[in-house]
Length: 358
Image (cartoon, rainbow, N blue to C red; front, side):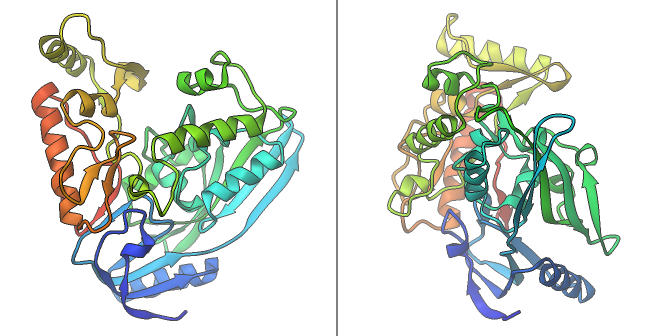
């Protein structure tokens, strides 16, 4: 592999922010990817893995080490008939996620159609347990093939060993151990129809009830339109998309935390105001980070410098063209601290921070 010294990393991220790496390598095969990781590990060299760069915020000083761009390719659909009619989908880690979703819709296969328009690479999807509009990849992933840096071997992990949870997984919790090489999914053949609609906003936009199925292409097109309306579909000419999508995850609160939160809401906004709430695991309650940000006074377009909240969605923090990473972090801290002061809830960043501290 060719090494590029003092390589700019900002162009490899959707924020378009961050300083350079000491060197940049690009792996186009699984073998090259594994060899580059093994070599770095053998020398104790700092290594930064970069896929689509859509969930990455790199500090202004860059990365003192090797950045390894994962550009592997390979997409295979294999029809199945048992136990249900459908197909298995295998994606190389470097495959573009949006293209993969489009291909499954064209093939008439349901399961990831509502994840259309999410930027990034396939290998990142199990790490973050990517989800949107009522679907998460954990509901369709069957196996993840990864290089285990601890055991120094390639392993195949069934979904049951991936510890998937809301926007997290075994891979995210132990980020220095596994390098995702391939991801396998089980998709459904429902006669050209989508999986049942689970998300109320999507169902409303489609004019159906939650639980209904719709033509796959219509589901994908509707989700793309919803995302575009929020600045969540990449467009180089639209600075609202110079972001990582949602900067903060939706808070998941214990019963005591939720009760205290509701008291704050009633005191601040009045007794008739009810924030969004959804049941979560372990008798917890999930609420909306976007709602919190807005109700704490950080509305669409908030900010005066080159880092501002998107004009289309309060969850996206954006680079208006010449921001620095520190500009964006300053805005993120202001929003996080303002929400905590108003409602006692601490927002957690979704993007991975490299040589940057929130």
